Image (cartoon, rainbow, N blue to C red; front, side, top):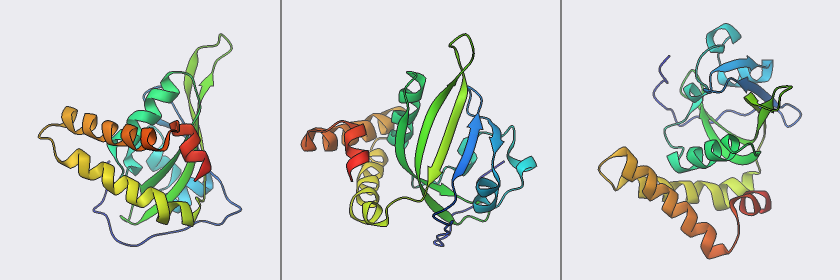
Length: 173
């Protein structure tokens, strides 16, 4: 399943709704609620078994996804602002809360994500400019590994300049 070409149209979902999904350890969707399907423009059958990354908007910095995956793979929860793409190529922003899901034996068996409408002020004032800055850093190197490292360095430098952890940063903007 390939992502469509992005449009400039933003779509929204009601404040009262929460987008919910679950994935296996490889990030393949095992559950998606009606709100998820509605906003993304897919039927549930089109999504189950597919990688969650089918919704990854090309303007999302790779460094942010690295931070997200590193955190949940370390068995910790993470919050992140994420720009997703719909089946039609439109986009929508979410404030995601992603957690590992544990089995009875304490092993991680998958991941669970709840997404709410993000603060428009935080997006406009902080996130959109920061993500543009990180993407610009990621665009400079010639290969993917160097690009990711440049994005991580840019994000880390931003946090260090503000003397905050990523968690402090994202929860206080």
